[in-house]
Length: 556
Image 1 (cartoon, helix red, strand yellow):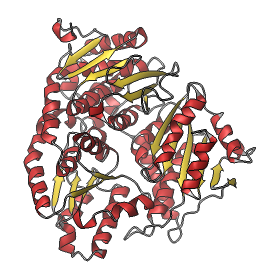
Image 2 (cartoon, one colour; image 1 turned 180 degrees about the horizontal axis):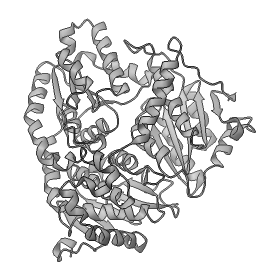
Image 3 (cartoon, rainbow, N blue to C red; image 1 turned 180 degrees about the vertical axis):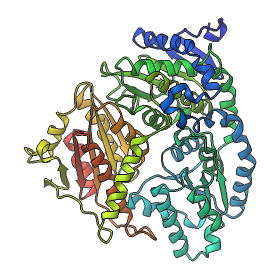
Image 4 (tube, one colour; image 1 turned 135 degrees about the vertical axis):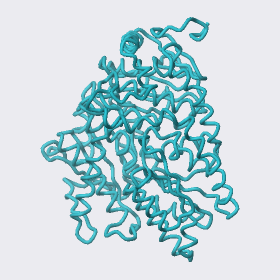
């Protein structure tokens, strides 16, 4: 008998099911805190207040921001008005032979469309990097058939503006006129942004204005998620149908899977289980963990608290079986040993399920789930470094030493005894506490340099307890980057940068992509070091040789 066969019971911590989604909890260590959170939610009428868009739900200090960030609750219905125009623009693009869709976006503007298209089996090239090697390869790929979707809520995101400029130059070099170039761009942005003005004045093919009352990481079912996915050929109407089917269950106290998931997350985080180790066993949700990672980390990691998502490769991966007392296991799919199981639910419903659960978790943690103060901090550091660059050249500190194809950079007080790469790695790994974590941050080409991600399981196996995360720069800056600075101060950081084979200028800017990439790395590193977070930067003077050296050092 399922929960839905019984009388509604908001305090049931075994399973809650509704709208095609089922969340199941296993083990008293997760069920007891979840039960406490459920009872508190009932007393404080959290479900009713969230459904009614009560901006005071997260406290007076968060009310002003929350008041303009609750439009995501209506997206299963309100986004339907986008569908006819998406279909129309796609039809015209196909008629013009433009069938290669490139999405220039960061964070919430790129993660959801990537997941949507991957699981729909349609191709979408996602450009969320400042790596010159990766950009050069993407710019050369089917340029004659390419349409670029430039997606930025603020309209001033430095990465997407740089991508737009690079594509304009590439189209111009290919002999296209200004009118032909304009027809190769579709824009998704908020009303009144600088990007809307650029697109309107430039007569771009189409401009989609998103709901300004939806934050970036809650925008999967908005124009930011639907436009690039729909233009690439995904069935975005189906996503809205799936979310709409779940919505009534989220607005009631009993049989509410979103409430149970949120209770489990907040219960874990408030009982010193501050890391969510998430594995995917559902082939229909491939890559979904990357989207969840941003949603939870950026929403909760502030004021010295939060829940850190740790996305592992599988339930056989290091970090899953050897879990510490500071972590809770979760799976997309029904897996033995998992304490939080999302055992059913299609993709459109999953987006809404996790958004609702994250909003509830914010209430349980007494933090606003809608701001991201430390993301702005790293952006500001990057801007200052670029402004101080002389003739587009950054003043990059000299390495402490060089070992083969790797330069070692870091705090001499921490690493002064190191004479070799192995010495430096041993010293930084000693800083990882039993209930801390190690964050790997790779400012490289996430396709050509993909082997570097093998460091995550290798280091997790070596540390045998403390969790290890992995993120591609600069995309993680819009995700776990918030948690790194604003969450619990227990992180240790290993940053990896690399030499660029052939740099790429950014038209109209006094700096290149490699300069921008390094400024982002150094800007974030500066934010971490200002908080006395242990950090080491390894610069690969030869990327392949450097990656091979690191993998060999850890037996990967």
